[in-house]
Image (cartoon, rainbow over all chains, first blue to last red; front, side):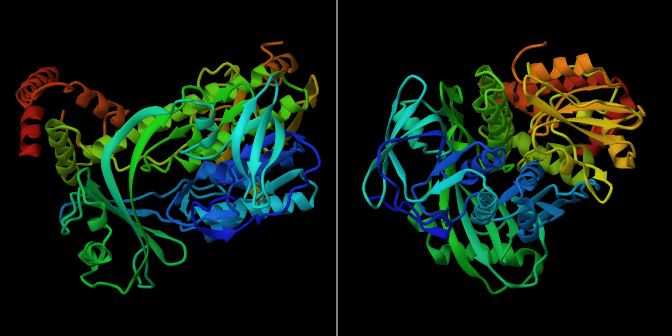
Length: 540
Length: 60
């Protein structure tokens, strides 16, 4: 039996009987078909490396999960061929209002920087994100990508051997056994893989409860994000949030505090009273709406001590968990997947050594710490933990209404941006006096190129990006080929983001679109040394 | 010099965290005293009576 733990929104990978003649060894097995496992499988498969995904359900789980996908995630999805439908379906918003009690503190307009293919972020329910990834996987499979997803395949036990892992898998037709050279646990915050290995998951529990109400309303209501500190509505708690998702759904959050009666708070009549008060507070009228989904959650910030245990890797929520403020859960998980995919692909093809995989752990542990720091700070602002922090918090809010200086201190979540791997060992020299945003370690900012965008050119393996009047040559190091992209015509935005005051530049860029090193001129020896370093072989 | 009312702290979230960390483990009375010492120290650093007067006006 494979027990159903939750309802699915979409059936994406129905159960199919598995051939049981003998124990099959797979190069890569991914446990968990959420956003992280699917992105990883797609990335590996497109590179020609086989990936088998095992999921104990047959589709995307229903309910309130991730709803905000940031630009870096959309850029990754675009590279994987799944970005366009996400942006088309998603809701883009720019205007936000911050309230304190009954009064409005300030209003902001994000006015996103132009010249990027993707918006700063979209609101989109997680099941859609998963569906579009699976659609892209089906397309890749049709083109021969060696990806397989097995629905209703639940891993029940694992045994680690020297160089491989044996998994016992339960299915509706009974159990079977398979082996994996590499196992990637993308099985969420309650990771069964982590438990089976007896690994700890430590951190901080925040003493707070949040009530989620997703409401469906067709009313003509502005597409804005509204956030209240100390909302004036009856029983609304410490803070409240309203923002829009596709399909006329609005996500509403109420921060209820620690000592609550869960059953009472989930009473639909009680929820409706709060929602009525919130919706009518600005417009004076209560639009017609239905409660689509309600739940109460608590949250934690924690991470595993290390994300690599030999040939077992942890990615996404199984490795690190953050509070939802700033949308750093699914977004950072997809970045984990992208970081691991090209490294695992090179190692499986024998073009890089095992030590390259250690950098997955060090780089993504650093990213997780940055996300936990940001999400903890937001939480501390929203839930002051002492009288004096409450006084300071309210002083910030008071001053924010009067003077611009206090507004950057108001923190209801800092939106997920990719981390920059400053001074990490795989990154090389910064020999160009260039813009800070595109320094070695940073993920490449997008920019217009011809009728399209720069990131469209940075796909596949390593890229040597040559800008302006310069003459790069194609080359490789120990079988790792570097593709050259020469853009003699440099648009204004591209120059601002990559050249600064220089009139030409050479960038070496990783398969995950992070800058390895940059130079004012092409120097074959310098580029070769940087590439060698980028694949974990040290300076050549 | 006039009183700066626009954002002037490069890493606001980091500053705010350090400010509150300075109060960790203190009683309310100790926190109030720390705040008073902090205001006096910052006022001395500013030194300009006109700016200080403007600041007092801005927060009343």
